[in-house]
Length: 301
Ligand SMILES: NC(=O)c1ccc[n+]([C@@H]2O[C@H](COP(=O)([O-])OP(=O)(O)OC[C@H]3O[C@@H](n4cnc5c(N)ncnc54)[C@H](OP(=O)(O)O)[C@@H]3O)[C@@H](O)[C@H]2O)c1
Image (tube, rainbow, N blue to C red; front, side, top):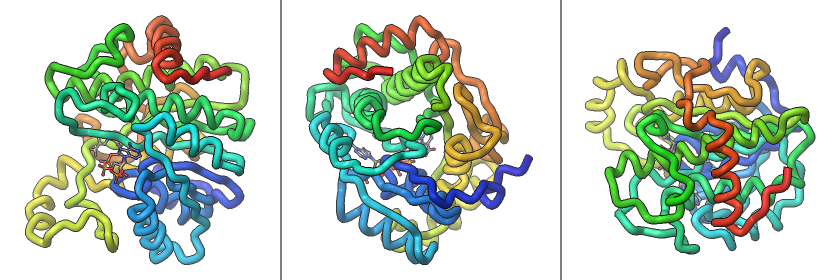
């Protein structure tokens, strides 16, 4: 089946929260969803950057129904405030915000490893506190990464700042987010709610259509990047598997969606393989307890 955004259903009457929606893939998720009629809440830590994104989406999608939810996923206090401020029902949440590069030893406001704390535990704490606002048939989509396959999840050392190779630091944060999401799938079994993972492949700004005020790229950089188009893709295309997981009729709980091309770097959305570790029920259950302990937030399901 074609999975181009044009093939997505109309989403009028549905409200979708996208974290990190002011830039990159999160921005494109928001623009695509708004173009299909959804009300989109942009969960962002900078009001200024969020307003720029809103203005850009409104230029592309006149009359787009948008809201901003102030949200810093690196701060448990900010997450709690965001959940408390939300006063509408959510049909889907896309856990997209992510730190991809960090100096060693950097921690969140709460002393957690910056990547694990933001990418995985921040979203865990957010979902736990948003749960009462989720529709009975809500979908949660976690943005994973190919890098999850290069990482080992060790719940016992999850909170500690990473000291090894940076790809594994990033990978363990994404593996943890994915394992928690697949655990949520298991815990929601029997309900109409579903939790899925998706990844954008290899998605870069220079191959992404320009948007006023977002990630400026010089003409030279665009020209050079165009040579890489057979291998990688823009962030607009990277958003496609994530949006697909969030709203397409053929996506269901426990799925993992990504680009179907060579090495899963680019291409139309398809189901892809997640590592055994992130799918392990034992790892998921262990991680869930550790996540509750580290965030101090109980996620009752
Ligand atoms: N691009 C790829 O090839 C690729 C591949 C695999 C997975 N991913 C994943 O896809 C997601 C988006 O990546 P991207 O390439 O679009 O990255 P990006 O352009 O750097 O955008 C990241 C977004 O996350 C937000 N963010 C970061 N820390 C945050 C925090 N503490 N609180 C709230 N928002 C925060 C950023 O907001 P600010 O503007 O405030 O920093 C920004 O909106 C990430 O989860 C990434 O790990 C990307």
